[in-house]
Length: 414
Image (tube, rainbow, N blue to C red):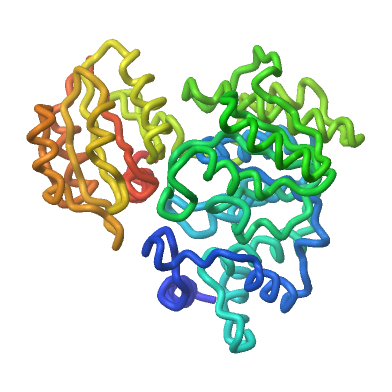
């Protein structure tokens, strides 16, 4: 397989299959019948794995990666399935921090041609079975599976995990999951399985009551992760990570109860070496110290509020590069923008990327200082050219903005 053959196979995959990340709601295929048929065609590799299921609106990627790092420190071979990728497709499927083998990806894509006509997988369904099969072939000790969207009808919800976790519930994808916290919580709680312990990282009654009710129906023990005491630190520097650490500790406690060997030192070292062990970037990621450049993939209101709160706590002028996708409620985002900032609004280079010109009237009304650019890179370069020693640059608003920035600039940094 040549690099061009691999690139052509990936291009074909993106074109052939509906992809929510690129095309939005029209690509979303709820329900488990299709993924069941797809997994059955490949021999149900997910049934031969020891899995851990992690859902939630925000924090599931960070939680999954911290957990993977802890288990790696304990000497286990750990598969990790996250989405979306920032730079390369193979980031979605990792084992002990190493991206999925490109030859495997290429060969697996070829198997699409042999699928029965009645099985028409979405992009996410196909990448999910790809992850299951890769982890099975590579004989991982654990496979940590992050929910894609929602939970109840998500493609990952065919697994029977050792333990399940829901980091939190917030308003996101309301056009698909519902227009209230309670409705979204019902969808998230759909990953709870009979008799399987559920670790909950949300402390709000309207969310917890839904999750507790589902846990009771499934006769599954409910664990309140927010009550777990913790003094541990992680190399993932967002202040919000303290909540995610507690969810990790809840999961680890359950694994220890099930006789898996994980020491206090493994936990401590795992949390301190997440980026080294798993290659995880994108959450309060320190791209550069001089000038100070920080990236964060937070993209819904709740996630952005936490990130902007942390930016507000930093006593310096900020140059903030932001871009959004089409379904983002820009008027709500504008109400929480960091103070003492200059803004550079950009368009992510995907079909769903929203041109800032479309919402410039809202920018004018808000009274903020801003400029508009056609691309992420143009906005970043403009910010960098004028940044002073005591200022910082922040890049975010979307996974795609951060991914595009890193793709253009990470290699140059090395």
